[in-house]
Image (cartoon, rainbow, N blue to C red):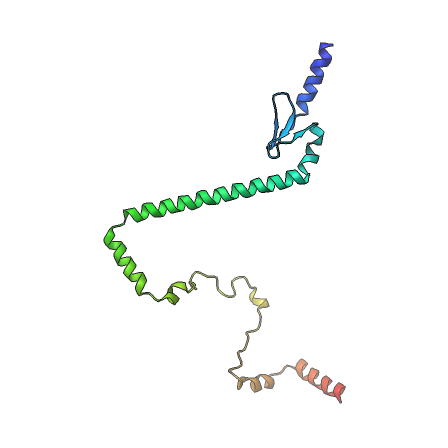
Length: 164
């Protein structure tokens, strides 16, 4: 009889769930730490993970963790700025403030083009789009018609025959 009990106890220990949100209370019951729900059987754990209550609770916990992390990063950044500002001399601050006031607002709001990617950085040069014309060079259009390919000429002839 003791062998059977030992085997059953070993079998129960084997079936324990090892999930980050799973824990066992003092009486050996499986409990979800996110929801606080007691799961009656280890085989029902996967079903609990798919339940709406669990998914919404986990999503809320992740959002709270993300908000805490953002707050911590913001506080660290403010602390670093405060330390850097404390090390500067008062004279340098006055000079910097005067320089900032003399700059026009448009100059400070312009994006830096030297740090941006070139227009054709991600493009395949063999498949490049034609350059768009703004309409200012109307004189170049007749020259473009003069250099029409045989295919263009054949297309125009076809259109004339079909229309007439």
